Image 1 (cartoon, rainbow, N blue to C red):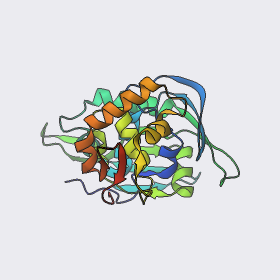
Image 2 (cartoon, rainbow, N blue to C red):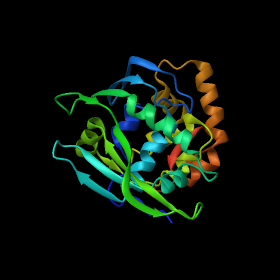
Image 3 (cartoon, helix red, strand yellow):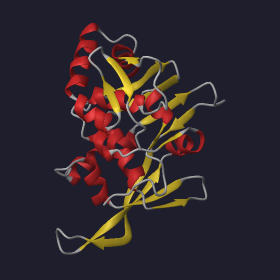
Length: 251
């Protein structure tokens, strides 16, 4: 059974609010593209989508121990089997996880927000290597190595300076559509629902950009409605008037 959040939050507020991760499960490769939101702006060089957010949240949620490095870094001890359980009921292959981790490591981000004097520049993870610690593997009957995950300086800075979020990432990872995941992550950064709820189109523009085409907005509406039942499991209610509300406080 996965308990989670023993040593780290699942995420932080700015990751969703400045749109670090594209609202897609098949993100494009970006080359220093600037993304502006009302909360600040981010510059992304690399490929970061909602599946990358899934695995990053799974690593943080499943972390069992944390070690602070003398240079200011942080290393987590993580059981890869627990990460796979968070990501999928049918189990991600290690090849899929390896590809996501490599792209997550390669991406460089810059975040600029008013309350920080200097931009956050760096990566989200630095490395994932086998630990000397092992655990019994019921599938093979042998032992499996745990992982040592070194967090990138950008993520360390967010964990130290940004508001922390605590929720179970597994329901988010099971949403069908990337735009649903991005909207859910954005909504979960807010404790309270605005009077009357959020307009669905407003949330779609918040994650896709104010210049989202009418086709993108129509596609977003359809995909979010397709994920409505699973969104409700996260405490996010989409009503018949295209309004979105926090149904419960998700954790």
